[in-house]
Image (cartoon, rainbow, N blue to C red):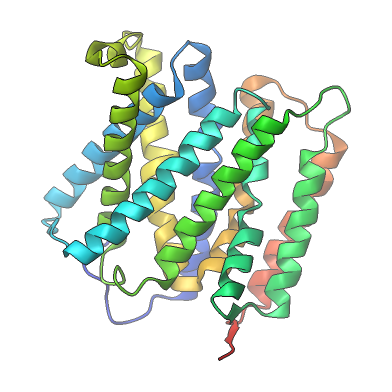
Length: 310
């Protein structure tokens, strides 16, 4: 893993697509680590605080070993704080949605963010090609199939709203990484570090408020090896790895294409639900997975840059 300032030579687009796939798969592992912790009685604030804290320690240690400077300008720091706030809000609203709707469905709904990315980019006068638009439509239809259950349960609107808020925060996170010139020279690893560090501070403050200022309340229930393994897994896979590869993919192949590759998030989440939690895989899910896979292949094969209309 190369850490350092942005290099002058543009990396091959293949690495952008690989990074995008890794982002989707690792982010889709959120339920695998988070749901067992929530079932043990840990609050969302506690889970996210330790998730981000462990991730910051791991990533900070990596940057120190690689002797990368932590120095950024005040202007860059302001942008990084905004990115940290957006990423933290995306995590908070997604985990909160798990209390109201199934984890696989919540993660699937978050995948609406490619549509939101495309809409935001249009407002910035960056227009995707018809191939990318068609891929977005196909993935959206696929997500609709993935969201359809077997008719046994009803989805609560609060859970749907929280999942949509998570998607919107995630979409804005992607667009800022792609469009901001201020942070263009900030490496992917350093960008991830400051985004996660912002989350640590935010969730610590919120936990202190909700726990009446009792710091020890954060450490209750952490005497199990299984809890720590889940927290470490949550910190590494859908946090450090996912955020770093997301930044890499967005910078190489662009915000819209990187977001479409996030289709691996709901697919992974559904498979996790089936294997780890015994959730059923319905025919609708199979159709949705096929549609989204076809959309990804089509987008990659017909890949081309969008046009900017002045």
